[in-house]
Amino acid sequence: EAGVAQSPRYKIIEKRQSVAFWCNPISGHATLYWYQQILGQGPKLLIQFQNNGVVDDSQLPKDRFSAERLKGVDSTLKIQPAKLEDSAVYLCASSSSSNEQFFGPGTRLTVL
Amino acid sequence: AQRVTQPEKLLSVFKGAPVELKCNYSYSGSPELFWYVQYSRQRLQLLLRHISRESIKGFTADLNKGETSFHLKKPFAQEEDSAMYYCALRPGGTSYGKLTFGQGTILTVHP
Image (tube, rainbow over all chains, first blue to last red; front, side, top):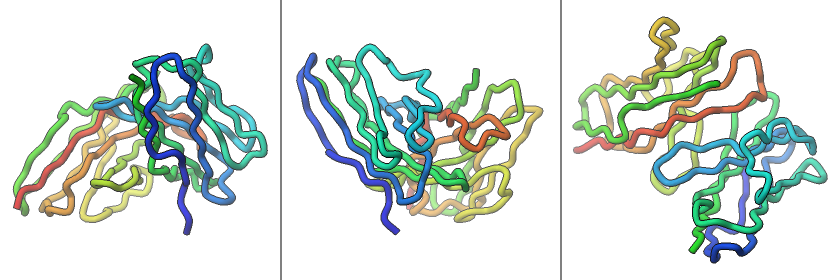
Protein backbone atom coordinates (compact mmCIF):
# COMPACT_ATOMS: atom_id res chain seq x y z
CA GLU A 1 0.00 0.00 0.00
CA ALA A 2 1.33 3.43 -0.92
CA GLY A 3 1.86 5.62 2.09
CA VAL A 4 1.59 9.35 2.64
CA ALA A 5 3.88 11.20 0.25
CA GLN A 6 5.56 14.51 1.01
CA SER A 7 7.85 16.78 -0.96
CA PRO A 8 10.39 18.19 -0.82
CA ARG A 9 12.21 16.12 1.78
CA TYR A 10 14.60 18.95 2.64
CA LYS A 11 14.48 22.70 2.16
CA ILE A 12 16.90 25.43 3.12
CA ILE A 13 15.81 29.06 2.81
CA GLU A 14 16.74 32.43 4.22
CA LYS A 15 14.51 34.27 6.62
CA ARG A 16 11.78 36.35 5.03
CA GLN A 17 11.63 34.01 2.04
CA SER A 18 8.57 31.92 1.19
CA VAL A 19 8.32 28.15 1.09
CA ALA A 20 5.64 25.59 0.25
CA PHE A 21 5.28 21.94 1.16
CA TRP A 22 3.15 19.36 -0.57
CA CYS A 23 1.38 16.31 0.82
CA ASN A 24 -0.48 13.50 -0.92
CA PRO A 25 -2.43 11.38 1.58
CA ILE A 26 -3.29 7.71 1.36
CA SER A 27 -6.00 7.19 -1.23
CA GLY A 28 -9.46 7.42 0.29
CA HIS A 29 -8.37 9.07 3.52
CA ALA A 30 -10.73 11.92 4.23
CA THR A 31 -8.79 13.49 7.09
CA LEU A 32 -5.44 15.20 6.58
CA TYR A 33 -3.19 16.73 9.22
CA TRP A 34 -0.15 19.02 9.16
CA TYR A 35 2.16 18.90 12.17
CA GLN A 36 5.21 20.96 13.07
CA GLN A 37 7.97 19.16 14.96
CA ILE A 38 10.68 21.37 16.37
CA LEU A 39 13.92 19.63 17.36
CA GLY A 40 13.58 17.97 20.74
CA GLN A 41 9.81 18.28 20.87
CA GLY A 42 6.86 16.15 19.90
CA PRO A 43 4.75 16.92 16.83
CA LYS A 44 2.33 19.83 17.22
CA LEU A 45 -0.83 19.95 15.14
CA LEU A 46 -1.00 22.99 12.88
CA ILE A 47 -4.14 22.26 10.90
CA GLN A 48 -6.59 19.43 10.32
CA PHE A 49 -8.77 18.99 7.23
CA GLN A 50 -11.85 16.84 6.84
CA ASN A 51 -12.15 16.45 3.06
CA ASN A 52 -11.57 20.05 1.91
CA GLY A 53 -12.90 21.73 5.05
CA VAL A 54 -10.83 22.91 8.03
CA VAL A 55 -11.64 21.13 11.30
CA ASP A 56 -8.98 22.69 13.54
CA ASP A 57 -6.46 25.41 12.80
CA SER A 58 -6.24 26.85 16.30
CA GLN A 59 -2.44 26.47 16.46
CA LEU A 60 -1.69 27.70 12.95
CA PRO A 61 0.13 31.08 12.95
CA LYS A 62 -2.21 32.58 10.44
CA ASP A 63 -0.19 35.74 9.91
CA ARG A 64 2.42 33.73 8.05
CA PHE A 65 1.18 30.16 7.59
CA SER A 66 -1.55 29.04 5.21
CA ALA A 67 -2.78 25.66 4.05
CA GLU A 68 -5.25 24.42 1.52
CA ARG A 69 -6.79 21.19 0.35
CA LEU A 70 -8.85 22.40 -2.54
CA LYS A 71 -10.09 19.11 -4.00
CA GLY A 72 -10.11 17.17 -0.76
CA VAL A 73 -7.09 15.11 -1.77
CA ASP A 74 -3.59 16.56 -1.71
CA SER A 75 -2.64 19.59 0.33
CA THR A 76 -0.08 22.37 0.44
CA LEU A 77 1.27 24.23 3.45
CA LYS A 78 2.88 27.60 2.87
CA ILE A 79 5.00 29.87 5.03
CA GLN A 80 5.35 33.48 3.97
CA PRO A 81 7.59 35.05 5.19
CA ALA A 82 9.66 32.48 7.06
CA LYS A 83 11.29 33.18 10.41
CA LEU A 84 14.25 31.47 12.05
CA GLU A 85 11.94 29.78 14.55
CA ASP A 86 10.09 28.04 11.71
CA SER A 87 13.02 25.64 11.34
CA ALA A 88 11.45 22.26 11.99
CA VAL A 89 10.24 19.05 10.43
CA TYR A 90 6.79 19.40 8.89
CA LEU A 91 4.82 16.19 9.01
CA CYS A 92 1.74 15.33 7.06
CA ALA A 93 -0.59 12.55 8.20
CA SER A 94 -3.87 11.13 6.99
CA SER A 95 -6.58 8.93 8.43
CA SER A 96 -9.78 7.21 7.42
CA SER A 97 -12.77 6.23 9.50
CA SER A 98 -10.55 3.82 11.47
CA ASN A 99 -8.92 7.04 12.68
CA GLU A 100 -5.39 5.64 12.94
CA GLN A 101 -3.10 8.37 11.62
CA PHE A 102 -0.50 7.40 9.02
CA PHE A 103 2.46 9.73 8.75
CA GLY A 104 4.57 10.83 5.84
CA PRO A 105 8.38 11.04 5.90
CA GLY A 106 8.32 14.75 6.68
CA THR A 107 9.98 17.83 5.20
CA ARG A 108 12.95 19.20 7.09
CA LEU A 109 13.00 23.00 6.83
CA THR A 110 16.04 25.05 7.77
CA VAL A 111 15.67 28.82 7.89
CA LEU A 112 18.96 30.72 7.87
CA ALA B 1 -6.47 22.04 27.72
CA GLN B 2 -4.73 18.74 27.22
CA ARG B 3 -1.12 18.02 28.05
CA VAL B 4 1.18 14.99 27.80
CA THR B 5 4.40 14.71 29.77
CA GLN B 6 7.17 12.22 29.19
CA PRO B 7 9.64 12.88 32.00
CA GLU B 8 12.57 10.99 30.49
CA LYS B 9 14.26 12.31 27.35
CA LEU B 10 16.69 9.39 27.30
CA LEU B 11 16.40 5.84 28.60
CA SER B 12 19.10 3.19 28.31
CA VAL B 13 18.75 -0.47 29.19
CA PHE B 14 20.56 -3.69 28.38
CA LYS B 15 19.10 -6.39 26.17
CA GLY B 16 16.83 -8.67 28.16
CA ALA B 17 16.15 -6.13 30.89
CA PRO B 18 12.66 -4.80 31.60
CA VAL B 19 11.85 -1.37 30.27
CA GLU B 20 9.22 1.18 31.23
CA LEU B 21 8.65 4.44 29.41
CA LYS B 22 6.66 6.88 31.48
CA CYS B 23 3.76 8.99 30.27
CA ASN B 24 1.55 11.27 32.34
CA TYR B 25 -1.33 13.29 31.01
CA SER B 26 -3.57 16.14 31.94
CA TYR B 27 -7.10 16.24 30.57
CA SER B 28 -10.39 17.02 32.24
CA GLY B 29 -12.50 14.55 30.27
CA SER B 30 -12.11 10.93 29.25
CA PRO B 31 -9.08 10.60 26.98
CA GLU B 32 -7.84 8.15 24.41
CA LEU B 33 -4.15 7.39 24.82
CA PHE B 34 -1.66 6.18 22.23
CA TRP B 35 1.97 5.25 21.91
CA TYR B 36 3.75 6.12 18.65
CA VAL B 37 7.24 4.93 17.70
CA GLN B 38 9.82 6.19 15.24
CA TYR B 39 12.66 3.84 14.35
CA SER B 40 15.84 5.21 12.83
CA ARG B 41 15.19 6.59 9.32
CA GLN B 42 11.57 5.44 9.39
CA ARG B 43 8.25 7.21 9.67
CA LEU B 44 6.34 7.86 12.83
CA GLN B 45 3.91 4.98 13.32
CA LEU B 46 1.30 3.86 15.77
CA LEU B 47 2.52 1.25 18.25
CA LEU B 48 -0.57 0.74 20.35
CA ARG B 49 -3.68 2.43 21.74
CA HIS B 50 -5.24 1.90 25.11
CA ILE B 51 -8.71 1.00 23.84
CA SER B 52 -7.31 -2.01 21.97
CA ARG B 53 -5.81 -3.52 25.13
CA GLU B 54 -3.37 -5.43 22.97
CA SER B 55 0.30 -6.31 23.15
CA ILE B 56 2.37 -5.19 20.19
CA LYS B 57 5.97 -6.38 19.79
CA GLY B 58 5.83 -7.42 23.44
CA PHE B 59 4.85 -3.94 24.61
CA THR B 60 1.81 -3.24 26.77
CA ALA B 61 0.38 -0.08 28.27
CA ASP B 62 -2.37 0.34 30.81
CA LEU B 63 -4.37 3.49 31.26
CA ASN B 64 -4.43 4.46 34.95
CA LYS B 65 -7.03 7.18 35.32
CA GLY B 66 -6.35 7.63 39.01
CA GLU B 67 -2.70 8.45 38.41
CA THR B 68 -3.38 9.93 34.94
CA SER B 69 -0.66 7.74 33.50
CA PHE B 70 -0.18 5.52 30.47
CA HIS B 71 3.24 3.93 30.91
CA LEU B 72 4.67 1.67 28.20
CA LYS B 73 6.22 -1.57 29.40
CA LYS B 74 8.11 -4.51 28.02
CA PRO B 75 9.48 -7.31 30.22
CA PHE B 76 12.52 -8.14 28.06
CA ALA B 77 13.92 -5.39 25.86
CA GLN B 78 15.47 -6.21 22.49
CA GLU B 79 18.05 -4.24 20.52
CA GLU B 80 15.47 -3.63 17.77
CA ASP B 81 13.33 -1.75 20.30
CA SER B 82 15.79 1.14 20.17
CA ALA B 83 13.79 4.07 18.85
CA MET B 84 12.03 7.32 19.74
CA TYR B 85 8.74 6.78 21.54
CA TYR B 86 5.95 9.33 21.80
CA CYS B 87 2.91 9.21 24.03
CA ALA B 88 -0.16 10.98 22.62
CA LEU B 89 -3.64 11.92 23.80
CA ARG B 90 -6.90 12.58 22.01
CA PRO B 91 -10.20 13.62 23.61
CA GLY B 92 -12.37 10.56 23.98
CA GLY B 93 -15.39 10.09 21.76
CA THR B 94 -13.95 12.29 19.00
CA SER B 95 -12.69 10.14 16.14
CA TYR B 96 -11.16 13.14 14.43
CA GLY B 97 -10.05 15.03 17.50
CA LYS B 98 -6.66 16.65 17.89
CA LEU B 99 -3.73 14.48 18.96
CA THR B 100 -1.44 16.05 21.55
CA PHE B 101 2.03 14.52 21.73
CA GLY B 102 4.56 14.37 24.52
CA GLN B 103 8.16 15.38 23.95
CA GLY B 104 9.31 11.84 23.34
CA THR B 105 11.73 9.39 24.95
CA ILE B 106 14.75 7.99 23.13
CA LEU B 107 15.13 4.35 24.12
CA THR B 108 18.50 2.71 23.60
CA VAL B 109 18.85 -1.01 24.17
CA HIS B 110 22.47 -2.07 24.52
CA PRO B 111 23.66 -5.58 23.53
